[in-house]
Length: 430
Image 1 (cartoon, one colour):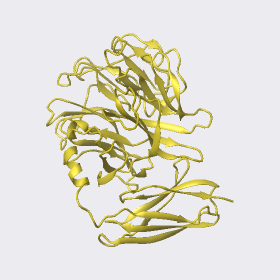
Image 2: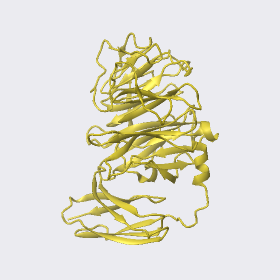
Image 3: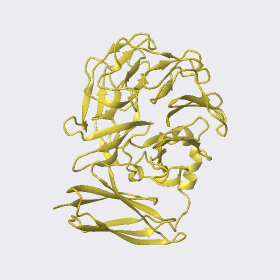
Image 4: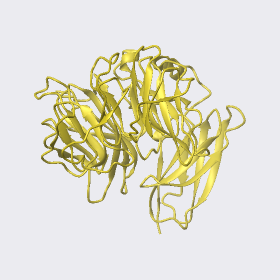
């Protein structure tokens, strides 16, 4: 299992750091991984404190925080005077380094909820946040404005004072009904739409799930440092309970609106407009429901290629992949002329339904596609494959589904494996 990547050294052939069950490095992606040191940090994230990545000074990683002052050769576990505030389980503590020159000294903000910890001396001493709404399995992102954003189970919270005090974001927070489980945070530097106000950051993107009658898999945009939010479907309506990895590509393409997404099912999509619309260009090998393998993380390497880490759901190995093409070249694929591949259309009738529904697929696709039905909490309840013809044929297929034993509520049907895959919402009543 690979949870996160980091890179150092030669941009054209970087040293790749991968964190999952242990911390490992690899120089040649066709060769074997090397286990780093004796420390076995389990899950979490890895970042370099120094800006000069050619000579990394301090590294933090794992379900607890670990530091290294020799470029990763040896590690020391950082033991704060107070507890990190949460479990040392699957996701571990989120953490980030605040930007210098934004009204307070550069610091580490870390924690997995319900509390957060702060350090201004690279982890030697720590202080607890004064107030923190409950938040678990958190990711943390420091913004250039000085604000700090944290997202996890229960939603998202903001801090305006370097992490000392936190307040929930009303549009993205709910402890009573547990509506939100927001896991991924991405920032598209320089890209804003609508009324960005005094934004110094660009577009902030969160990705996760929302429960309730209006629930599903979504991403949320903010173009004003987290003040207001707009909700859209996950890229390709991916249906990823832990969110979708959004990878900014502005450094590669020069356009702040260029971004890639890699879904948990392995679909790779590109966007020119900051994630408003997406075009599918490929798929990560070895990732499918048949192999019980999902994508856990994706990152852009200094060589301009996408790196993807996977997880096998059961005993066995997981793998990492690097794209053959540079990310900027993917847009040539995304914009290529494909007149034979038009958007597919999925319809569900009757709606609402009591006994059975018929899901009908029309359009033109390159290969057979799957139709997946999930409940309002994102749990898959049915799946089938609808053939699209032997080769680039016109899809015209239907699926009759018995829903007489299903619980009343809202369900979502989506197409996996075709462009413009948007969910169709329908209701089962009694």
